[in-house]
Length: 429
Image 1 (tube, rainbow, N blue to C red):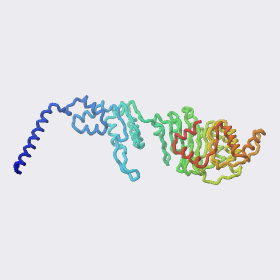
Image 2: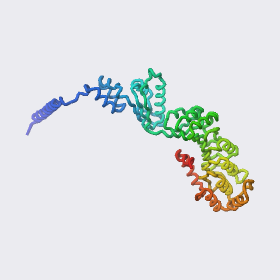
Image 3: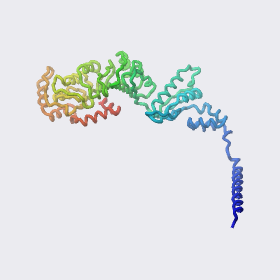
Image 4: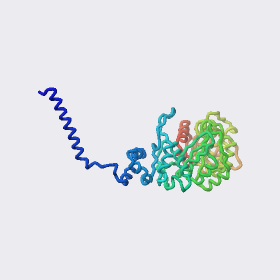
């Protein structure tokens, strides 16, 4: 049995032997260890090229040699903008921690290595504010003179995602000029106070095919756009379609765009009514291009049962004058006779949405001069029964037609308001 002194001696003997073995093992492999500080520049450039911007920066702080390689032109031929590039964490009471773009980092990077860049590629980002600020700074650097321009070698600028939809809503008059910086932009959703004459001119030279002008209770300021500007834009962009919409709690009528290629006018407010002034304005301005007209959501006002106070005659005038209307959404009270007239007179009508609870089983139309006797008495006979009315409408439209319940009408409203792609379904036959 070993004493305490012998145990201590044996322990230190093992420790010393292990240290000596480790030293010998390292010395055996000294010849195989690569000296990273003396690697050729070509190899270091290859390594740096595959590093992220953050790792590339940290690597440049290792030694003077790596710092010099960090500024090699071959490393900075391409700049990939990711959601975390040039960002730092910021805390706000309403948003918590989020990655905010550091304007100083972007500026320093473009000043130091901007002359080496041939390609800038933007990956999908979650914060549009960061993308906007990056494009704004990039635009400032592109405005330098060609001789001393920091981005004089830049030839390619790519979005790896296809920006097809852009939304912009603010309270003040502030044109959304950034819309012209998206070459693949096809749908622009904005409010009237962001649509200036210069923006309309820009749209004429872009790929935008759907312009949604949405007005709500906060839209109290508007730009005046001359009709000649709209005509010139329509000639340059024949595929451009303008969609006017009123939403929310607004009590104002839609801000009409004279001579604009308006294809749809939709109200999704509970307080809007079909007034004769608005219908007359529509028939004068958009008789050759209007395709969709309607009022969504359930009304929050009393609907009269009197023929003179209802919108029956206005709807018939609209469907006769605007011959291209293929979608009509009616939420107010109309008679079954008016429903039959709409189905007969709408030469392009394909989709007709009417509330079942708003249909009045009656014929309160007087015979008009353009109606022959058979037309008028057939309408009166069919209008005295809901089923015969639905059968006549189905015959005119070419498919089995039924009115919507209030629940189905609200579901239709939600579908239209929540998805712009669903709105395009209403705008196509």
